[in-house]
Image (spheres, one colour):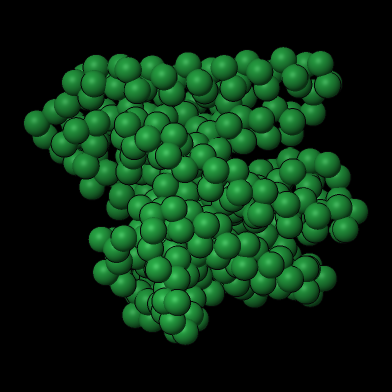
Length: 388
């Protein structure tokens, strides 16, 4: 019996090692061609997952937990990118662009869900998939192109800040709705969840310095353990309260401030990349290749429409800065890429057993825009003939 267990562990190690080596190769290849590795991870999951060549026999519980940790770390590092002052200032200065962003980019997903005859829950999730841009992909592209100091870049970052704040409201509401409660119970739970998010956000803004002081440590080891432990504790409590573990992690990241914030981000980023890669591959595993042909045309149509609406959003946001047409186009194309958040939302649909085609549609949609976004951004100046 012990020998059999040892054999199972050996096979698990071999499979896990093969997956990691494969992901390393994909990450290097993606970096070589200047693209985010997210599309490559999704394609790998599709290729080896359900209906693919050969799915690994690793424990589904292990993979699911690793994927959930990846989501939590994604949101933690996202929160670490912002300070409370940046959030409040961004919301105050560009709320009109934020509202336009919601109207232009969530609506196509809602309309598509209605045309496909999906349930109200699936339509709500598809609207979220098409609305949210990929902060991770966009930040990397702007850095690679040397545009972080451009005049139009603050408009892009402000839109991303507002989207992330919107997710802090959207995810708890979705979690409550997917729990399948009655209208009355659902309304009460949503109000409670939003109140809790608001209270925690205010506490993060006003008392973040205390958390920073508590977690401060001279050694990287102690700091990393403290930050990860606090994040998982808050994420677990948030999940129990139907607020979403991801939102809890995001708020922890916001609460940290000063030099500790940058130091924590540097320590957490490698772990985030590891577990996030597992999450994207796991999402690909869950999609049946046989379902892709039926969603290909809707995904392409959504990608084209929402690429244009994101360009319009960035154009409008950058216009308020008084920049020229080419700078507005650079801002618009920078927002086109979709990625981690869209997959997180689609993963909620798969976990809740909603429309089986939603995961496949979201996967193809993200693949298209995670590739098209960086390419459009790179050649944005060529899309506008002059500054006049």
